[in-house]
Length: 529
Ligand code: NG1
Ligand code: ZN
Image 1 (cartoon, rainbow, N blue to C red):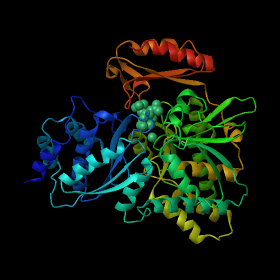
Image 2 (cartoon, rainbow, N blue to C red):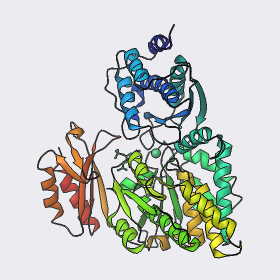
Image 3 (tube, rainbow, N blue to C red):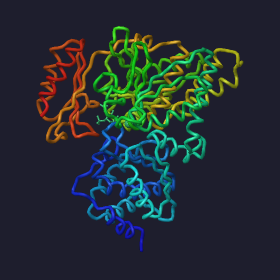
């Protein structure tokens, strides 16, 4: 029996429902009830991908991130911990929809000249959704059917699994491919930054864990922080439902605090999303007004810090330091980065694969989506130059210290993908060194009031966009209508685009006042149908 025949045989245990699947911005994502066959088939595809990559480990994450608990999803992770290469997304969709999987599998094998003798390895993890348990079994069925070997990590945050894949494929250079290795790596880097900084004080953080995996994992991380941070973990899954009225997506969308937290004015609050790859900060001021410190603000904080340190080291980088944003970035964050920090800002389509790719063009590329998903990428050149400074400079100098701080920060960052736990520690390191409260941080620039709306229409894909999704090209006339509406407001901007993860169209508007942003978003929504 050939591997392909065996795959077809086992496939009968994972019948495909009468649904059209599509590998979107973050893999397949929908109601969990429909996903069993997709899981099995992604197990198969992961094996082929691993073989096509000379036996490198491929990752599979079972998660629907910030979506409700009855949803689930699956995405593949490429060898360096990055998102699956777009040309393989097509294979994923074809395989998920195939009536005859042998034909599609054979096509992939031929197209990539896959050698059956190359051993395949697949790392699998899931979030806390109950449906994930069976899905991991279906995935392993797929992996085994094609003769691959699967390693089940159980419950992990999405960025933890990305980290495992990278560690394994770089032979430990990036860290150890275990959960303990992950906590060791980032807690050691954080403690190094704490000792280099020398400031005292133990900030108290109130953390919204979205009733998800982040709450569980951050408790394990906290044990290794040696009392440098005090974490009060709310929405830890012990009573509330995953992502229900909590989590980073909820906080960003509704611009309010989550349920399940007891917050006093001035408290330093943090929220993760359901699979802990997004993080946001927020607080109430003394008038009980809610303030959100979003991904754009985290990006500017990180870039401002790195620029200051780079200047101190005197290191010059050929491809420099830059920020990558999407259309959802607040207009004032863009002008702050460009005008005040003097750092170039690039804009790409929504979705990590786009921003991540663009960030790789810089020596230090910091990307954050406004929703709190982001990280910083560093070339080997940066590491090399910083190490040289440390080696050639008197340890007691500011120059040496700055280089060590950059190196520790690089160790703290999860360069594979946005990581709520690691990003939170990055923010905490910078705030601690600056001696800033959240109010101080919020005072750096003022966000333009903005509003996002979701509009459900029959077929969201009739909307086509260009210019990093900031302009509509179809249906005809829609862009003119948006322009006309926008011209009636001050400092205003608005755009619409079909979501890549939900069956809706997203409308975004910003303007000089809260009322104006709300009314513009509503008016534009009414033009979408
Ligand atoms: P879609 O549904 O395509 O807008 C959302 C987020 C993205 C990204 C993906 C993946 C917004 C507006 N969009 O994509 O930034 O995080 O989910 O999770 O927040
Ligand atoms: Zn997420």
